[in-house]
Image (cartoon, rainbow, N blue to C red; front, side):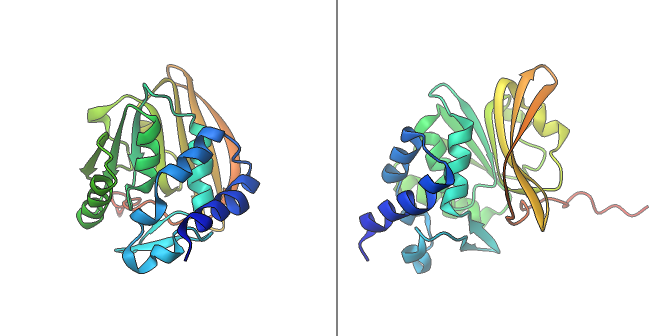
Length: 217
């Protein structure tokens, strides 16, 4: 397989038609090697328009969804970014290429270890992978200029919103199958948030959602 041709085709045939036109984001997709974050067995599918299993029931999102989120967040060099759900580490690597620092929270130790290995091998040094349940954010390291939630949530937790600084942006996919909406939420003033619906999609629920809601009354 010609990897560079496959990468080019992914960008031109999947990502650009999805209205991802920010040249900095497109350039980044050439630089951050997606195939290096896929499990060896799926390396040849790294550029396909599909979710890729990474073990423990977890996945890499389809390339166009990650690219669209990157574009909408408009990450700047001074940004401190929180990612919830590290997965393979690929999204963290994209974010890190644009941000000052990325804190990525992963609930499964074995997935966190996989991501750390991938990031180290790729020479990414400004990502901190923490093991824990990030459904309500990671307030100890906040507030953040940008937050990315890498799985769907039924609703956005108020404590997560509070961790956005004024001017901070969050991309998150909200709802339950078959209807989910990718949203860009911006903190416009203390306690005030503006939400823009970006696109409809369906992705797996964020690992850890519901883990603490199992109360019986």
